[in-house]
Image 1 (cartoon, rainbow, N blue to C red):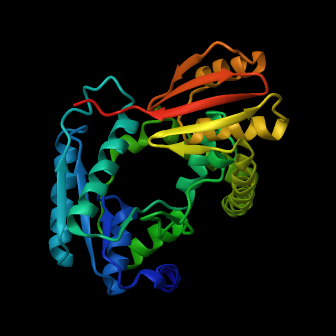
Image 2 (image 1 turned 180 degrees about the vertical axis):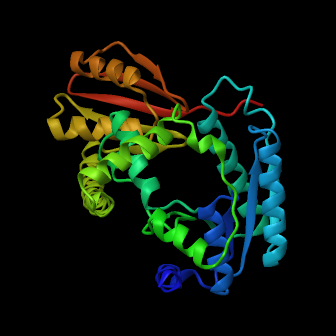
Length: 316
């Protein structure tokens, strides 16, 4: 039943070149075993961050032996500076591995990257994003396919995955850091989700259906945003985008402009507040702003305003 469900999910990718991210934990070990059992052609990639001393090296050794047993090509990358970074450890590790995975896909001619995220991972992401005060786009959760990224186990529960491992006598590694409830995701996993399942035994299914509804809402909203975006008559000249602003923004136009500046041009709340303050006051004096990757120039004339958006040029 497990393999049939997974086979159906991946039927369109049977002849694609696949790269599987593998940690050595039960989820990625099960996905690797299932891909091999179904006859898929794939390679694997493992990251060693050296965060847990000997444990990290033992994970790598386990994955190397597992790849050899399956007869699958394995790529291993070492990251030594994560532990000493002032950045959020989990976020930095995520950025490093995905950048490496994408580079590896490019160099190896891979069509898709596979990760072993499952249904509970999606619910945990829902609560993490809710605590960050995210909109529908953050609450809708991960999708099965996002560009060249595939998450084949997203409809599978942790119990289904563990059951497959048990039925097939699969060994796997246990990451001791997953028990540390000082990490927000772990606290949600170990404290909140069991409580929700006590309150409502079908909580997992309810959240899955809720996230499907949110994904449909988000798709509709994005369509409407793209339509209303045309009201601003965005014009591209060289690397600069010129947006024409009406004298008075209606509520829909303001919503769409905020969304685009936030999602596409990476404006944080502080920059957005400054831009919309200037829009409200219709400043005839040029105002300048910056986001992570773009610079902005806002100025009003008699009957309209212009917002120029230009990407930062890379420094040599």
